[in-house]
Length: 285
Image (cartoon, rainbow, N blue to C red; front, side):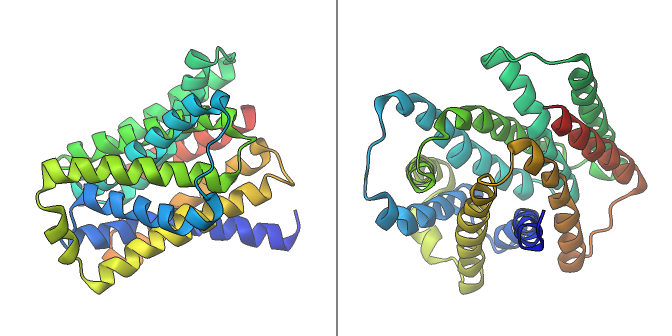
């Protein structure tokens, strides 16, 4: 792999890893979690409108596109924000996101009838054992709700990957625009009913938080995703996916630099089991 592609991969993993602590900074500024997710998706939609131009895909893609848009644009981001909003520790949430791969494998078996070998089952089981070890860390006893939301985030990310397999022939700007459209509208409605006056809450967001939300929309949701699809022109999914195990390193390091968070030894044991299992599982996918 040439240096240029390695640098692109490192950028993608750093962007994904940074998303967690930077989202926590926004939430700490009293921005409602569902509203933040909605605004992030709204910005993605706004930026992509000139490229999308309101094109409607072929009918055969509509069902998968709707399910993908709801899974990724609504469920993943809202549960990510809720998990961070309900947890005082960020690192376990980052590790919990790694469960997206085993969830994706399980979803493929149930929904697409794909065969899962005994080795795959072992690595899936091992990844869940590792996350259980992390969740049983005594320091996390008051963060169970956040960890539960992190698990749901990973579940819907895994489901989104299954739906995305049927969208490979669609333009990526169209997919992301639909994802932004569904995410923005649905989450804005949810925020209105559960978080109060949307207009007042939006007007109360300070400049620092807006910059961080823009970062999430432009750098993470657009540039990182576009860069990944660029690499898929040269490499298979199996060659690229193992690198996703790097983003927790960037995320945990940035969490330490921003919040001074130092995970416990039990966390590191569980995290090593999860990441190792996911790497080996991806090589078998």
